[in-house]
Every structure is written in C-alpha cells, then in structure tokens.
Length: 126
Image (cartoon, rainbow, N blue to C red):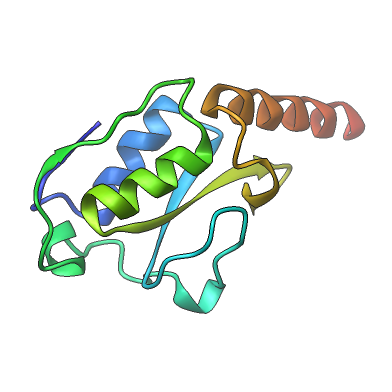
C-alpha cells in the first residue's frame, strides 16, 4: 500500500479497510510495545490530518501489505518506515477490539475471525 504526504489519515484507513472490510486501522500520538494495547486518549481525533501534518518528517513510500502480513508486522512497519503509530482493530459483533492478543495472526486470519464472529452474532439474533 502506497502512502503519500498528502494522504489524510482517513484515506489510509479507507484503503486498508477496502482490502480488509472487517478490520480497521487507528492512528495514535505515541507508540506501543508489541502485544500491548494503545490508550484511547492517545488516539488521533482528527482523521483529516495529512500524514505530513501528523509527522513533519514523513517521506512517501510503500508499506508491505498482503493477507499474510501479521497485525504486529503491519504496526511495526508503520512505525519504523513512516514514524506513524497505528493499531489494528478487528470487528467483534458491534464492537471493534484491538488485536493485541493476536498480533501474530496474519491479516487474513484476523479477517476470518471477524467474519466468524459476525456469523455467530447473526445466528444468535434469529
């Protein structure tokens, strides 16, 4: 996935979610340790910020992203390559949960787990 200085945070989120509809990225002001969660208070509230506004040292580039990329790898790549701090979330029913306990799962498995959860909740409601 290519990232450009003029991309807004919402643009990056939308491109990611187009690939993985039951997952989402959230951007944070500070980094987190692998396997740890990010605090809600540290989330960037303005999704219209451009990447260069968020990180004045931002340089455009391509982040490796495919279905075999793990959530943890993606988060670390954003930080090391672009100085951007993200957390992957997975849909669980009506809620979005941080993937901290499953950071080693590939994004395809995260997506499948979210789909299984959606199917489970759909069947309960019947």
